[in-house]
Image (cartoon, rainbow over the protein chains, first blue to last red):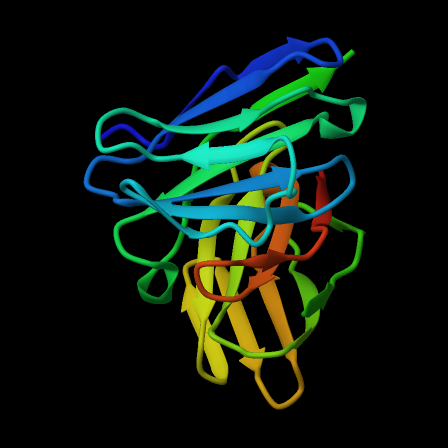
Length: 115
Length: 107
């Protein structure tokens, strides 16, 4: 049973370009979460999605960031017009139900470097 | 909001015991989680406490006191592979994480 799959593992972008990070949850999981980890800081919640629905995006910056989890295919975290401050590790996690009933399963992360 | 504090670093000897403390202040409480994260890897779940008391799972135990806003993770019989960052987190689907405690196990 494959774990949470994220790609790309490493991504380099120049300022102003777009970054797209993909996440396939564990088989049977319908809840997806995105977290961001800056150097020397804790993981910060960004967004919680179920299939075709954004449940909570309170941790997402208001501009340039968007997330989706379509009926078919992986969840996508999209960052438009990247800036140096977007350089971080972006982790996706999934769970079979919401976290109240269990733990999160994290992917290996996508490390974005903005030049 | 949430405020979670844990020590930045700890060092211990192989075979010893280490206790990582975590204090938290939250507007609501739905559970406390401990995760392990090796450098450059995914955080992996270790334990979950929602009621006061001690939860034991092999060499790892986690304790919670809700009235004190306090938890600790106890690692016994330390092994070299236990060198990692240990993350304390509170919440439900929206977890708030501490910055992590880097544990270094020395031979």
